[in-house]
Length: 212
Image 1 (spheres, one colour):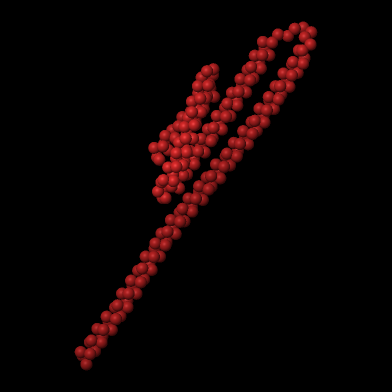
Image 2 (cartoon, rainbow, N blue to C red):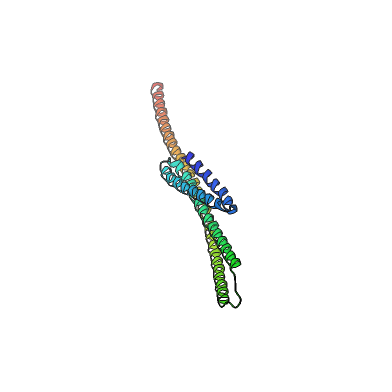
């Protein structure tokens, strides 16, 4: 399991590096990097599914820590998918803006063209709608990011609580062992005391009998 975990962790680091390349890529390189990132993410998801199976095969003493590490990998993979979708949205928006700008610059207007005013109004309205949609999408992404941050904080809180519970359980297990040891020692002490009393009484009786 450790080998698969480290392989998956390295894939996550590669995807994080490729996201920076994707943001700076141009032309045909964009599609190449995008396909490579998506392939790595699919591989990570497949590894996470295998790790879920391997976690259940771990010894009970290591299962909790192994599950925590596997869950962290799944969380990181979800974050990478969200980041990729956000970068794709920005790229599509830039491409659409470039197309609109190119169409506007290459269009030829004739004097007294009756469609000029209508076309420009339609273009302005379309641009306004695109800006509104972009703003709404940014708000949604920001809201999703805040939710993910909140979930991460809750996960850390639960992780600390789980660690405290394990510490308490270990302490109680040690206390139970000590109590059982004390009870066993008390029983042995009682046995030694009663045996000594009986032996002492026998010696005193024999001494009294022979001396008198």
